[in-house]
Image (cartoon, rainbow, N blue to C red):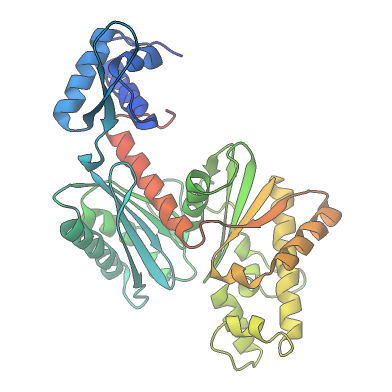
Length: 379
């Protein structure tokens, strides 16, 4: 434990952040425990707690009963009504939104069909209007403090522009990102939807946080994300893990053409099949034997690439398209991958399902809010 002391403005801010982080980390902590946990003096803890109580960030809760002499101490807890956060999972088909309190507890959820025909400005305004409407109707006067949006596209490391968007091309560039932040008027975090889905799995699912884990999101499009020791990794241009762009060996098709709903539907129609949904290909295997063989071969190719790129202990599948692959198929792909490239990895399904991206966006929005009130990201 590093002892923090009262001194410069920077140190005082760090001390305040350490107290908030300690209160957020568990229920029922009192002033004496804060002194022990942070290494700060009693006077510093008392002053910061008084400030936090005055600011409405912390509440005194039940009394902590202890044996022996001394008065009872009041337990301290973070005030869930200190602010609201919103998480948004923008997909090519649906846009899911959650409004949560300052502890991450859901206030309300909403799902709308994504208006794919809107331009960048109009789509950003549509999203912002729905968030602000939820705040007005269900926020009970608590202010919105932070928003995080998962996008179906490649987001630059600077988070200020979208550099690739196969299913929603209108979000390319900076216009969408700038407009939605201007409309919401609060700090707005933009990230790739697969990165936020993996963040959701790490925070709320069953993935081990001390291992290398990969998420493969097979839905309307194809996305992936990787985390090392609980930290989701991104490249400078956001292209890390964009395996859907890769062409299949000796063929013009890309991986996303066979391993995404939109891609497979388009490919099947190009081959002359009369289908309206990708699900029809899996529902009638006798009608599409060659196409399904190509799909399974593409899946093996993708998992083999992931295994060699990251050597993950676990690969988790999410997205509606992934439901088409049975446990038998996943087991066979895992075994063949090990036989082919020598990397043993467990292939498993997400326990969060479609909620992963939304929960990840909530976690990102909470992190943004906590950072704004002084909690350092490493705490």
